[in-house]
Amino acid sequence: MNVFLIGVGLIGGSFAKDLRTQYPDANFFGISRREATLDKAVELGIIDHKATMEDLSKADVVILSIPVDVSVPVLVDVLDRISDNCLVFDAGSIKEPICEAVKSHTNRKNFLACHPIAGTEFSGPEAALEGLYKDKTMIICEVEATAFKLQEKAVELFRAIGMRIRYMNAKSHDKHIAYVSHLSHISSFMLGKTVIEKEKNENDIFDMAGSGFESTVRLAKSSPAMWTPIFAENKSNVIEALEEYISNLTAFKKLMEDDAYEAVFNEMEQTNKIKEILNGIPHNN
Amino acid sequence: MNVFLIGVGLIGGSFAKDLRTQYPDANFFGISRREATLDKAVELGIIDHKATMEDLSKADVVILSIPVDVSVPVLVDVLDRISDNCLVFDAGSIKEPICEAVKSHTNRKNFLACHPIAGTEFSGPEAALEGLYKDKTMIICEVEATAFKLQEKAVELFRAIGMRIRYMNAKSHDKHIAYVSHLSHISSFMLGKTVIEKEKNENDIFDMAGSGFESTVRLAKSSPAMWTPIFAENKSNVIEALEEYISNLTAFKKLMEDDAYEAVFNEMEQTNKIKEILNGIPHNN
Image (cartoon, one colour):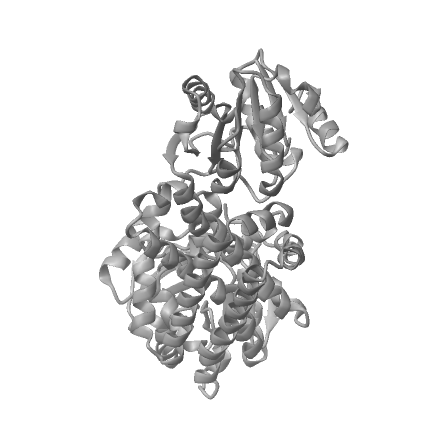
């Protein structure tokens, strides 16, 4: 089996590490805009060979894990080049634009639109982790547009590395993910910004920061190169989520201004049920 | 050494666990409004004996770790009852109101105003952890109001359990802690609320939540009984921090509405420096 990674960073690199364990005979090829990144991926044992788009005709599986703004043109190019039985899947955080862009492509049936709910705040080949996908959810969108045999092949690969599968339509995916992922990133970035701004003239402030603050701003370490195109492509859903968040914060502030502390208590108590929800989320570390 | 815990939960209980290791001859006494909590603390080996306020005359050390709204009246009562060489310290998340309330008390010199930067989102005796305070910061406020010998005794205890000491004035403490702790809690609670509200009619949404979401809403599991009085007593600082946070979120939304994605990128990139800041924060787990 020839597996081609387009993008050899955290997401693609982690797929390679786990697939290699399950399919020891597979060959892994890497394609990247940056030669240095490919060299790093070879050095780390993520890929066996550096490759180019011209080599894609010999691919059995293509894993597309590059920022979402470049995914669409690259995917079209990939679909133009592959052989009949090749499976191509992506790992992007938004699904409607990519499904829309290739819906009339002759080889649409070779593509499976995927979003693994897994990752860390780090990026690049060095960030690739063994076991990243174990017990994690793989969301598959518009599965009916993919050839039956290739659906089956994909599910076999995902199950082999320990993932559970969920099917959704692309529009719902993009709407919900704005709440449970994209909004968390913005809340974290803006919390980091608010505190850093305050800190400018107050050097001691971070001696006062504990693990609670760290947890809440962890996502503010994430890559702007990855997240800017996600926000751009999911603009209306993200803005809607952000408006609801700002409105809840403003209402909380109003309760405090009015000394309505019984209501403040109730707001928090009702939100405590997040405990049960979080119990269902698998950990990386 | 007779150590009295007023409040035998996460904070007081964790002090007892670590102090017991360092001072095996010490006796630990517990005082709580709820008998069942004291029984639990005995069962867990946090305290040796249940006690009442009447027993405080035999205390060498009193650790006050109860919600901040009840700390002030209880502290006054404690200072009325203790012997001359007794050290009393609290662990509250705001320091100006408690310092203000006892500033003219005859036994003010027996009290040290403290805030350990340590904790988890859990509460009660079961939440007490060995090693919670190791490598954590203990902030001491208005140290000059405490008797020299008792300052020394406190620092010895804190160092024995692995803490580093920082001295601040109470007013600065309350202002800065609003940013690095209180605001994180509100951002997390309101993020949880926003997502739960959306989920009402959308049962699938939490299958899409990953470890990033979990990290960002972790603090929304915190105790409303503990946090409501903190917000009430630090009202003006918390409202100021919340206003700056809302204003940063609103500005970010505006950039997205204007398709100003270069600016969106820059906002995030500038906030990435939180990485270096977070490297200085010690972990519990």
